[in-house]
Length: 431
Picture 1 (cartoon, rainbow, N blue to C red):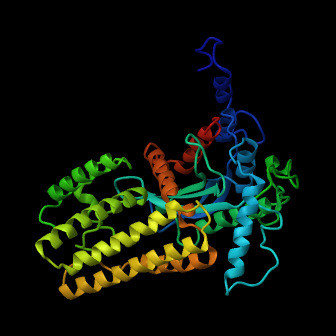
Picture 2 (picture 1 turned 60 degrees about the vertical axis):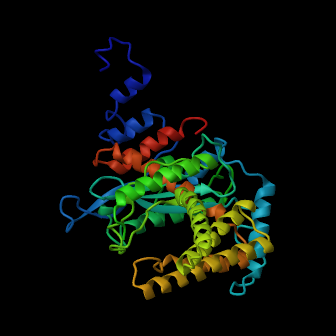
Picture 3 (picture 1 turned 30 degrees about the vertical axis):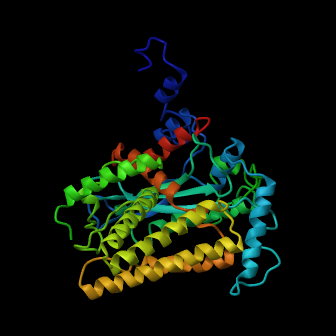
């Protein structure tokens, strides 16, 4: 490549051409290529047990590439990607301390662990998503500063690692990775680079140079025709969404109505996620209101429609109250109102399930998530955190982007290729 260029090869081309020809481990081509690309951060490799891709009954040792939280945080702080004021951090910890004081089950302490140093709080989040037609999933784990509000062009979540789910051995594969992440987060909490490895071993040379030094920026910071019905519903939904300008969606397909991977069976389930679900809910509230008006004009009393209307409206108000409040913090009045809407929704959901069971129809089933939703509502009265501040919309978008990357990758060394592509983007200014 360099020879054929007759001396006109770029500096990067020359560095890549020399990959694997120097250093203590000359055979490490990937290391040299990564350095030639001048990635903003170096990957850290954790040895984990995985299932053999060709024979799941066998185990292999795999070096999973991850980003260490303390190194990622330092880079984000140094490059201006974490913009949080002291006043914002102080407001956060004052709210957290007040919430802890209201919790009757919490131990009484003078200050919370992060309050003393006014640490910048971080969020950790993980999810999986199908990335190919065979239904295989990819696990993604990310980190983000809670108080920082990213610009439109900036990344909202920063991946720490990714691994294919079918390679994972339950209870074993992810455990070593989380041990390393915990070790790194502890270093970040102390605002100093670690002086030894996870188990007290000597640090790699690239980390030994910074051992004990301060981390930049500190820390913590039953349907007759599914297809026709859905096409009609989609068209009406698009017209409604466009007239109200909330957003537009792609055509809803029959496959989205039945989730064969769940335990729903023949029960129709419309699998919309995150933001789409909220917009669809507003549309359904509009439809239910119109149907109720028609019933009243015709003198029809339909208990199911009345309950469905009340339940839909309660959940919609639950969202609206959150949107009207501060992104993170709630007043006592706001928390009480949101809690009330949540309890009203659960009451009507239970009434609808009982009605459907008595009528012998497959509608309005009780979901396990209702239990968690009740606890979320109860916690609002104590901690007064706005659920909107920790919603999954941005996280779901991150998984979608990661999934699009994975689709373009060969299965060989997919985890490493994904992390490198991500680091290349992270090195660009304004992202």
